[in-house]
Image 1: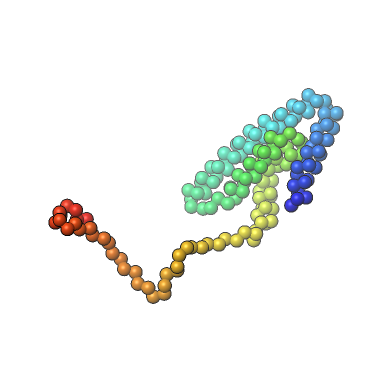
Image 2: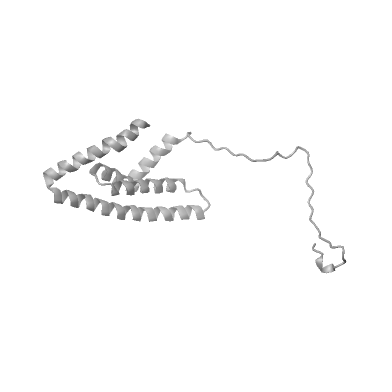
Length: 156
């Protein structure tokens, strides 16, 4: 896990910086800056539109009484895509855009489900003593009665 964090926070930014410097060398700083800003704006717009579509899918699934597992995973992937697209860089933008398109997002979702299938356990518990075998339940209600003979105080 530490290795992955090291790659994510140290190696990727250096590779991104080297790639941006190379593009700036070839195309010029203005074009590179326009590219970075344009991918950020386009990515934000795409993430927003895909997020709204996914939100409606979640609502439809819940209204139909189904668990929206695929849509929830899609929502998480769209969130990650938005974060990647707001980060300046070419590789993060490419990966972010690939998360926004439904066809490739489906592939990532399937990979994630296969990777984590069987990793989670569902347990239920309750507090208190379990009901005794053969115990009898008596259904009843309380009637309040005051000693002063006031009939209005009587509540069935």
